[in-house]
Image 1 (tube, rainbow, N blue to C red):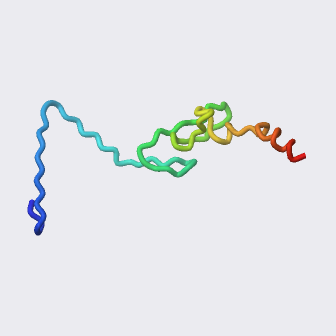
Image 2: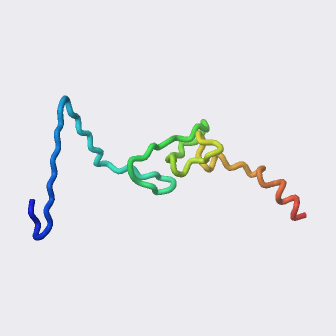
Image 3: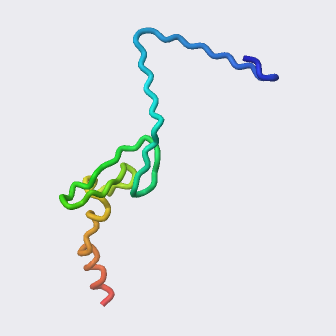
Length: 83
C-alpha cells in the first residue's frame, strides 16, 4: 500500500487451526468505574451483593468489598489518643 510518501508492507503466515476470539463488550466496574476486560468479584459476605474488580478490591481482604472490609473498631485506638 502506498500512501503518499509512506510505504507500508505487511506479511503473515498462519498454519494449523486458528481461532480468533475478539471481545467487543467492555465491562465497567460498578464500584470504581474502571472499564475494559475486567474480572468482577461478588462480596463473600452472606448478606452483601456488592461487586468489585481487581483494581478496587481490598488487598487485605480480597474476598470482601470495601464496605464489608471496613471495621469501625480499627480506628478506636487512634481516637483514644485525641483524648
